[in-house]
Length: 512
Image (cartoon, rainbow, N blue to C red; front, side, top):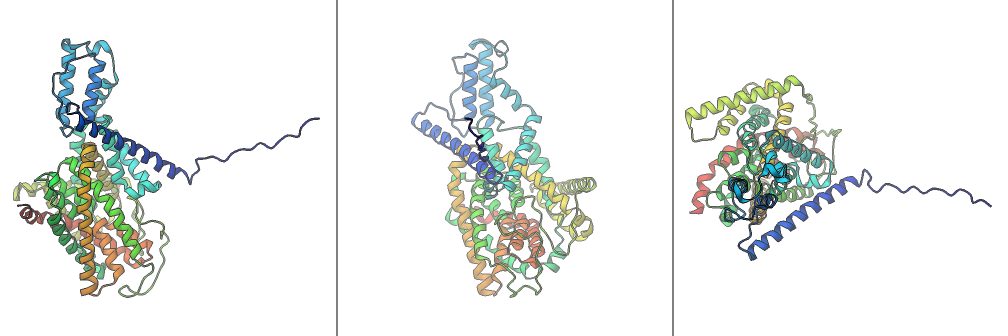
């Protein structure tokens, strides 16, 4: 008697489209946790054994020594905070020592993993490709994963290059990083300011403009108060006030202003990495707080009547991604073409060149980014139609250059140094934003009787920039505030660098 054929059970796939972002987030979290745990163990071992060097680059040198069968070290171990140039010199000494009698030559041994990495560290194409891939990966993670969206693309990008550098995959110092800081960052500043037509801001921003100005003043007050309470001495006597100025620029305009101030004041790359990481954590919590307080739908208190729903309204997110499209009512969408890309880069390059020439003639000690920013704002106000046609392509290119800056900053940083400095920076940024919010509500709501939703939106524009503010207006169904939110955010780009730099002398006095 034959058995009837049984039904074959086909199990459902474990990794579905819905579960894939969660799995990716878990994998990234596991990798980060493992690396941080290893770093903590390494740091603890160093504290109990003074002769042990905890630098990842020096560990690579130890491995190189082992591969060369060299038993003697011509150098003395140094702390983890040594610069990459010192580690590179020590590696050169080990190679020379081993090749000159301390052991077998590297040519006799063939290509070891250490020698392959050493060659890649000198390959600018490899380093640039790595930074580009990581920058694109940061944007993709922000768009497609909950984990990446919570951290933001700049922070994800910076963390990935920070890890790659500290495990020896990419160098701490490279001509590519200098190219990004000296060429691409100055180009990114005017690219973000192509939409900074001051006449349009004053004409179309409405009452949101006043709320934004109150928010900017609140950030200045918050920065001074936070620095008086936490002077950031752990960063160094010359770095504390500079980071405070950079964070003030970040909370008046946006990330591009942080970059401009960091470049102008020559803030150390490791400190930049720690400041960005700490501030992004606080900003993510603050944005969630603003979304919780704001009410959906136009209140009608200070907003004109008439309600038109945006076709791209989104209500499931408190934080937009970098390349997210913002729908502006009654405005034609500008497409990105080959000619618009060429015109955008050429225009930005001319503005940077002219800004550098004027800076050398007027004030050589000043960074050219300040004059270039002022020139871009003036040009966008005088020739609005030309710069308006380049706004979309300029912003897209600027985002890529900004991502490369964060990638280079992460590669130049020390993982243990970031962990050591993060607590004080988180406390500073948190106090700064708490005071900003209290002063904003006190002046805006208590004194000027402004609409609460407009104050929350203005605060979002201060802290996050035009993209996050416009996304908040869409998510909360305030279609008539989408364009004003973009305009006041661009105004922050145009003014935050100069305002925050002017705080420098006052903050220096607080340290004495």
